[in-house]
Image (cartoon, rainbow, N blue to C red; front, side, top):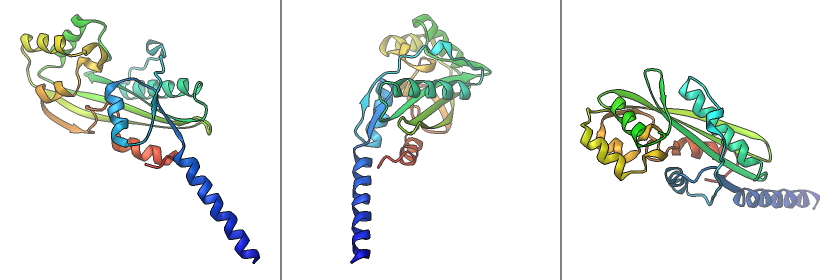
Length: 211
């Protein structure tokens, strides 16, 4: 009889733990359509809350370290408002020959970015961070795609920057531009989501989220 009582308590504990996991609040520290698409692909309920950090206050000459620092800073910022949530955040840049391409300031700079990337190979660097705010446990990772754009004529550059919201994109391009302009892509596959979805699933599981 005593053994049966002990098992009954353990079984309830298991049910309670599963219920806590199922109800875990997930917050995406971004309103980016690409990152929302990534979260939709993951398939867990979530809400969005942009971090609104001063990104220019965080600098690094290494694109991998820069994106990681920014992703982690966004997660910690949102955790201040959501202390019981699991926070997902990310950052991305393009990089070529030591130059880092973040979001362009205006359409002229966007056009210049695309001129510089045209006819060359460059890297698209994406970081993802997953923070369990209550446990203060932070996981982060960096993934890199190698992309080669074909030579571009000025007309198609101008057409692209007038049709797309290029001021919202690192390097002034998104997945449609990759489909139109790229000759080769290798490495990680995340240009269309600005978050590495497969890696994100693993990290969420490591933080106790059922995915």
